[in-house]
Amino acid sequence: MGTDAALITGGTAAEIADSVRGLVERGRLAPGEVLPPVRALAEQLGVNRNTAVAAYRALARSGVVVSQGRAGTRVARRARVPQEGFAPAGSLRDVGTGNPDPALIPDLGPALAAAAGRHVLYGEPTIDRDLLAWARGWMAPDVPVDEDELHITLTSGAVDAVERLLAQALMRDDTVALEDPCFLASIHLAQLGGYRAVPVPVDAEGMTVEGLRHALDQGVRAVVCTPRAQNPTGASLSARRAEALRAVMAEHPYVLVVQDDYFSYLSRQPFHSIIGPDHERWALVRSVSKFAGPDMCLAVTACDADTAARLELRLSPGTTWVSHLLQRITHSVMTDEDALARIDRAGTHYAERNAAFAAQLTERGLPTQAGDGMSLWVELPVAAREVAERLTRRGWLVRTGDDFRLMETDEPSRHMRLTVHDLADGQAESLATDIVEAARAGD
Image (cartoon, rainbow, N blue to C red):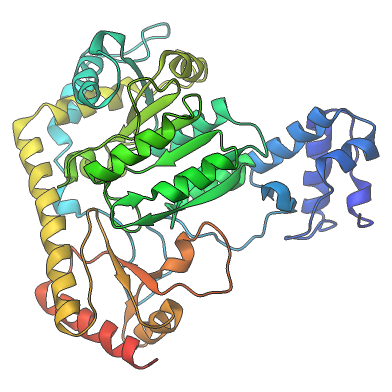
């Protein structure tokens, strides 16, 4: 143990966390520095191991440290971590955002005007009655219980839902199965929660059977799966693959299965569930942000009764409820025929533009298959970072597959995720040409 780590003091979790935070703020503990293992810290301070665990968990949730499971706990680095929709583009054209087209998001003005007429007071139900009825109809066909047994919970977006679901099921150092490559927010949730992520490879049909079986053999307590438009690959579960995954999960009925169907209304693919009829711990999460706008931070979660009860404890009336104003806007939009027609046009637009761009790359000698989703996953013959660097000199900012890797590796990624649906035809042609030429330059 280093000298500065030996300066950690405290007899309670709060005191220990404050001590570590103070050492970090004063520069006594440097970014990236490894902190003492839980057992060693507990012995050093003469406290119970659970007290040390609670201190590290509090520090992780506040971003002071990053837990890497058995690899230890480190002081968080100050460098910006990759996040959806952000890149320091400067004068470059950013084609890695993953953002929807604002022109295809329904107009929220009429819904906002209609929703603003009624005030909600403390003590009222957490879910608006009209929204609850709509949400039941949305979720019921795709869950393993009858509609009258369906438990609905609202959260502030899909990421919030997944975080709460994992928090009520996992403790620090517990294992969770995540897709690899992985959605950026899921990577962050595992790090901040102190969970040990077990990668499950993704192919053209979604999460692989052998990968899931391997993760379950390692004792994972939760599985997070994207059934459609997996981010970043665009893969959607086939009926055959979903059936095989259900068979694997049937042997582990008490492992929490979280299905994040974030693309739902926009998807051009059917929904296939990996949750069987007898599974005990499950949740289906659907957000409205991809089609109603990123600022519409609302997600609907359908889950088993025990999981619902735990979630509701964390969403008590008057404290952390989802705004009823937001709920009424959502209900108004999702029951408006014109808004639904625009959402459907958006889904078609994203699919057609991705397919057209994939065809352009293929015609130029870079075989590419469009999946589902907002973006396109492109495989390259050389390291993606090399191609990305050359593209910056041509005016493009792209996002490489390295950002989406669940585990660090010395082998560079050969994939890029591109958001091209908002490019004009001439711009798309120029980008396709520049990508192929940049990839060939490294041959």
